[in-house]
Every structure is written in structure tokens, then in C-alpha cells.
Amino acid sequence: MKPKTRQSVTDGIPPEAELILNQIETKKSNYKQKIIIAFAFLIVLMVVSLIVLGLDFKFMLKWLPFILAGSGYTFLVAFLAISLACILAVVGALGRLSTNPIFNSMATSYVSLIRGTPLLVQVYMWYLALPQIGKALEAYGIPGFQVKYGRF
Image 1 (tube, helix red, strand yellow):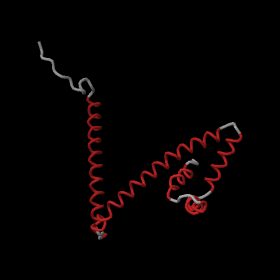
Image 2 (cartoon, helix red, strand yellow):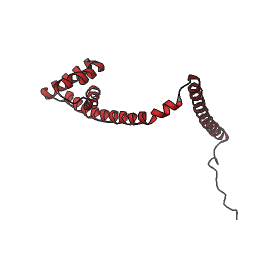
Image 3 (cartoon, helix red, strand yellow):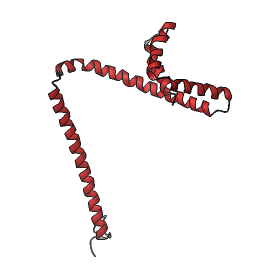
Image 4 (cartoon, helix red, strand yellow):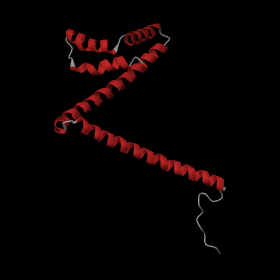
């Protein structure tokens, strides 16, 4: 009785197919090597450019916690604005698809008005006009971007 041997994946495959499989594996490994080389090149390029620019790293490290705290708030505001804009966009889209003439005209007016004005004008409106009616200035970053990007 012969001992049982484990069959290879390529057993029973014609030699031409085995050759193609080997070429595919070689291309995969070459692709991984190219990605690693590209990332290494980019890191070296970044380090060299930082050295050539003569940046003050002590100054940068001094303000790094402040910048990281600000970037956290930036991501929070962006996340909230995008989330609320998606909700507003769905409401606007459903309003435009509505057969009710009131909802349809309100949604159409909103989309036309907001799309027709540049973002900078809307930011100035949120920043300069709303404090005139006694509203707090800091709280209008999220609604400003929500209204602007909810039009799509």
C-alpha cells in the first residue's frame, strides 16, 4: 500500500497553465516590491526636502500639541457638517421629487439659491450677518457648511 501524499494545487494542470500561474505570482511580488520602493522613495524625498528647506523643528515641536488639538476640532466639524449635509441633501432631494407643489417649490428654491451663490459669500453671510441679529458667532461653522453642501 502506497502512503498517501498531499496533492499540490497545480497537480493535474497543464504545464502552460502552470507557467501562467507562475508569471502571475511573479507579477504580484514585483508589484509589492514596486510599492515598497515607491513609499521608501517618497519618505526619503520628504526627509531631504525638509532638511533642504531648513525648517525649525524645535519651533514645530513646540506648537505640535496646539496644531493636533486644532486638527481634532477640524475633523469633528467636518464630520458633523458632512453628516448633517447628507441629511439635508436627502430632504432636499425628496422635496424635489415630491408631487406636493409646496414641498417641491421650497426644495427647488433652496437648491437654486444655495447653488447660485458662491461659498465665500455664504461664509460672509454666516460670519457677518448672523451676529447682527444677536446670534453667537462660534456655533455657525457647522450649519454654514451643512447648508452649502446639502444642496447637492
